[in-house]
Image 1 (cartoon, rainbow, N blue to C red):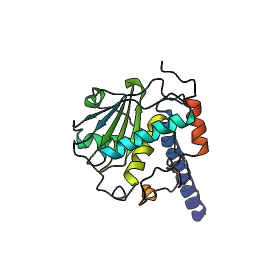
Image 2: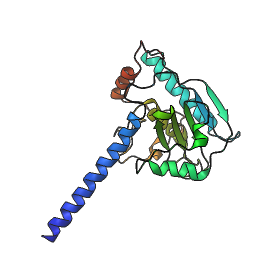
Image 3: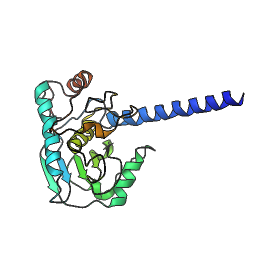
Image 4: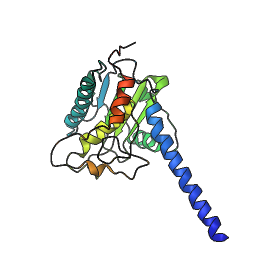
Length: 222
């Protein structure tokens, strides 16, 4: 009897874990609503002036804009403004941890930043994340310290940035480790992005269909 009880407790625990992980993955999709962006979002890139990831960030933004061009929509990620304004370490760590307890509180200093999509290249250690704040009209993307594995591996950083931007655009996770948007609850790790050749991992056919639904050929900003 005790073994049966233990088995049931373990099963229920695993079920709850998977449910929560799926919920957090769906939160990424629902950050903007399933209709996607209603305007061309201006992008603010936050990092030190000499940050080596700046080029990777621009490459990731270009990847998405090229993708939109290929699917025939006029939607694009908008103009990019760079700022060296530093966001306190405790804020980035707290925001990253918040995804696991579904707490979304946008600090006032970030609220006051210009731009609709704020991309932070941080020097702190946390789990890279994307948060949507519809009531504030902002989406925040946080990328962790590039000196921490697996971002030290070639080709990983550009894909991690592109992955989080994918959430900011409205995509969730899939379970295919050969695709850009693979993630929880799949047993995926960003080190799979490693490649000696600079490239972005592809989207799935389902994700292309989703993008076309969110931003169809007749898409126009409101």
